[in-house]
Image 1 (tube, rainbow, N blue to C red):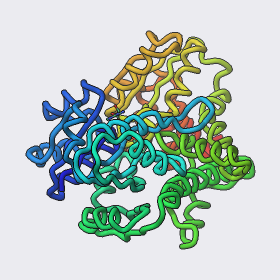
Image 2 (cartoon, rainbow, N blue to C red):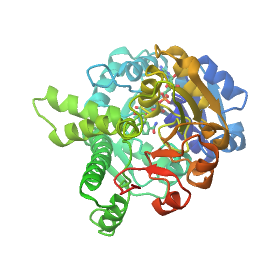
Image 3 (cartoon, rainbow, N blue to C red):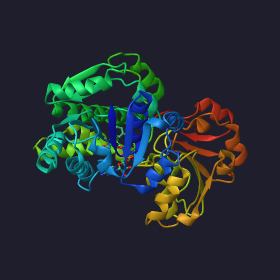
Image 4 (cartoon, protein in one colour):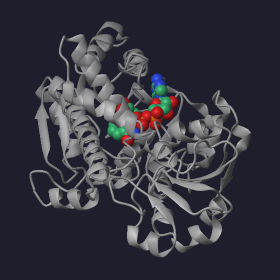
Length: 439
Ligand code: NAD
């Protein structure tokens, strides 16, 4: 099948490469010339495990272009995987999705199916269909279907090749048949439903996961107050198959390009329909508070960060990705800098993206950040260390080194990376989330 994918971000590029791996001819379209030039040169513009290798292996079935007209002209399937970022009021910005709809209307000369893979508010696929119908240049049948994506950054390639489920929202059997031929090659349950329900599955799933995280974070906060250990609590809860043991890691809150915006977008949509999603609202509020937990914990040791040197382990919103969208580092580091701290930061893949974001921001004191590729060098001579991302390099780091290299061995861990007894034995003052620490 001839497939065109609009958007070469985390979803679009991974989808395209996995479709090529399944033997399809795929044209990747993006408006960003830099990305397309990098891709043409054989380099992935994003970091995702296995992606670069698979791109190279499937090179002959993959084409990269900014020329959408040619790409959509004769495609059998067009996948929309452009961004749907948050607007100031919390709603989803659908400009990019609607732009692609217009571009398809202008270009498609063959009968084709358009799959809306971007996460979009309920009713958006109907609007995409309307835009295409109203702007179609050629008299061809174009069906629009919803096919929400459930991959997680950090495991995007394996998630795409082994999906937990495939949700297809269609309005007729013709579209269903075309889509089934593609997805039957994947070993996963397929649910066929109407477009609105498919769109809702995505938001309902993401918001449920966000709720689960905020819930365990609140339990963690209470554990700290009343003297319980959230890790044991979560483990005990997780044995119950009705609860499950995933998404029960207490920490400094969820980030990334999905949960923050998808909770706000569904809450906004409910409000627009005179309904208040109280549970989702609570998840959002708890998450906002949780992001600042480490700063609050550090105040126990220092009234101000003025004149201190703070080491930061982890900049990205989670391990396995170079993505910084809504990462706790973007909230915590500006506070430290604005109070006058010097910051030494470590991240295995996120440094370049972080530098770029800081240079474009109005955060004061960015000349006081230094970047390191070694944890030893990052923590050397520092007064306090914040752990923001649970990279393996951090989890496997020898606790004794905190004592050896830091000026004052205080570690404030937002991801519960270490055993408390180990830190105690290493002589480190250790604060983490929802567990009883040293005193
Ligand atoms: P992204 O920002 O990484 O990539 C979007 C890409 O679309 C960019 O490269 C941008 O230049 C390109 N683009 C914009 N307008 C275009 C146009 N007219 N034609 C072609 N390309 C265009 O976004 P992402 O993280 O891949 O997310 C895409 C969608 O998938 C979003 O709706 C998101 O919510 C959803 N989603 C994301 C994830 C995730 O983990 N990132 C998971 C599931 C679903």
